[in-house]
Image (cartoon, rainbow, N blue to C red; front, side, top):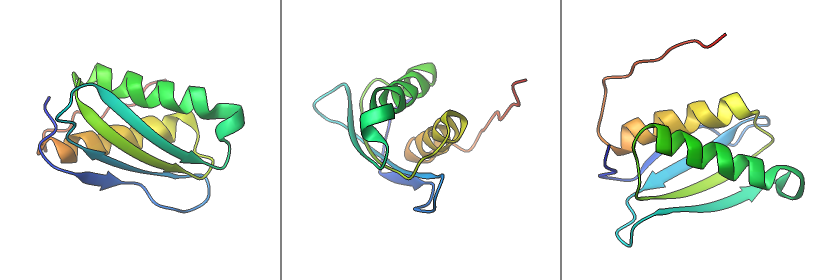
Length: 98
């Protein structure tokens, strides 16, 4: 998938994360993270964002994430929703993992 435009998913509520994904003309994935728990979980949050984008086949994107203590599953869901919006896709294949 290729990021075509900026898109947002999530909220600024407690236990959520607001993710803005936009094109990165310079190439690669660039993450700007602002988190209340960055010292403890910053590396894990960045990893979840990068892994989710990689799973979707996105190689070039700028991600601005404002985290308010979101769980890993919430981070991945917000990134996935934002990525589909940013790529102009509406053919979601949502699944539940157990």
